[in-house]
Amino acid sequence: MTILIQSKSLAKLCTLVGAAVMVMAMFASAASAKEPAAGYTQFAGCPSPEEKGGLSTCIRSEVTGGFLQAGKKTIPIENPLTISGGLNEELEGFSFNSKGGLSKVKQKVPGGVFGLTGLTWLLELLGSEALTLYAVTELAGTPTEFNFNTVTLPIKVHLENSVLGKNCYLGSSSNPIVLHLTTGTTSPPPPNKPITGTEPEFSIDAKEIVHFNNGTYVDNSFSVPGASGCVLTLFGFIPISLNNLVNEQAGLPSAAGKNSTVEDFDTELVARELVYP
Image: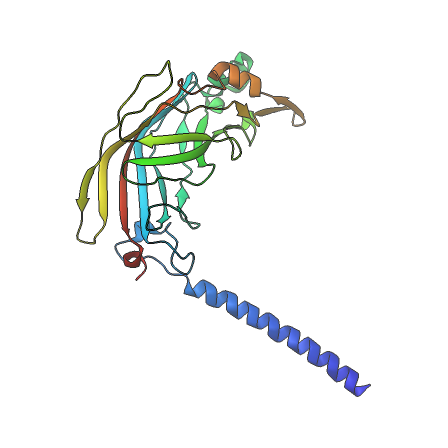
């Protein structure tokens, strides 16, 4: 009997010790995660070697202006958005940590929900202020060909307003809007005609950060799928799909050759070993 009690006590002690070891390991792992060195804090979205191996370059690109035209609707880029992360030696394999990726920045959509749905009674019931509509561009896959003159960017656009519900999107992770951005000249299908971007200005600063400033990406060869998840809930429990109304007002889905984007940008690249020495 005494032996049995001792065995149970020993088992409990082992369990407690094991749990303590796991907690200590978690704290040790968290403690080992590095912060960027002074002067390189803008690259915090680039994974450290402890977070991900195989990366050699940290990159941060800021879109400072431009627009996204999808079907009959044009969304101005008035608030800068940033994409940041790390790349391998071939400038591929884009990866990012919790501080990186594409920043979720609201852009005001001209015409608001009324302009997107055509429902005049919403305007009379709620007023124009409550119908302000925002578009938030989100990643819908992994960017590729990421460098100073091209980037392929799979995205989805979240249309944010309580009238449309919480899940109103143009594009999705399974059916994204794929932008083949270039500073060169596009070759779109008709009716669009070729447009040309702007090569950025090159410089290197004292911290060995490579700058590509005042560039312009363009693309007018992409398609835009129809809206999904746009639902008006009346009286708190009656769901009414607004997808068809959104598609009708916005001219969606919109085939390649009928959409375009222009994006002014500044890009920075630096060796990861300088960010995380």
